[in-house]
Length: 164
Figure 1 (cartoon, rainbow, N blue to C red):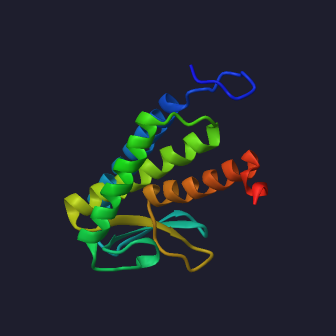
Figure 2 (cartoon, rainbow, N blue to C red):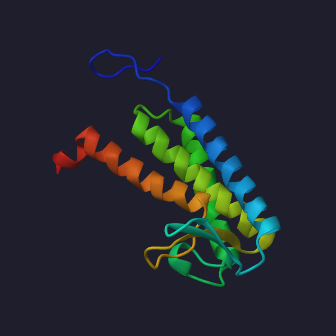
Figure 3 (cartoon, rainbow, N blue to C red):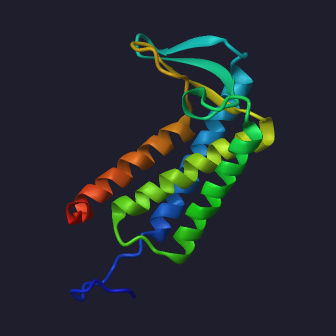
């Protein structure tokens, strides 16, 4: 078991990260399969009135439809991020919970959207906020945003940002 410089054992968060990533990918893929079978392209369906509706779209771009029409390149980026996150979890056990959560969410988001790009040529988006004009998104997109938040929390809690 690895230890901190002060002698305390370092918790191995790998199993937690793998289980979280698997659960998020499963939820993402199941929700997208549901959207593909229950919603016609462009169809809207109220879900939480005034807050969230369902509308199926195919996104060939990245966040906010950036790089639209470049599914092959974005599929390659998804594969690279997936492989790097998985390799890091295999060979570098995260010493902190927030870092493990960040890598798990990043792995899940990259893999979830990557699976769509590789199988379908576009990402299935279907969640739409009503009160504000915001791009339509999916569970994998939520995971990627949670990864960013967890990385930020880890960075702030670790105190490394104070080192200069």
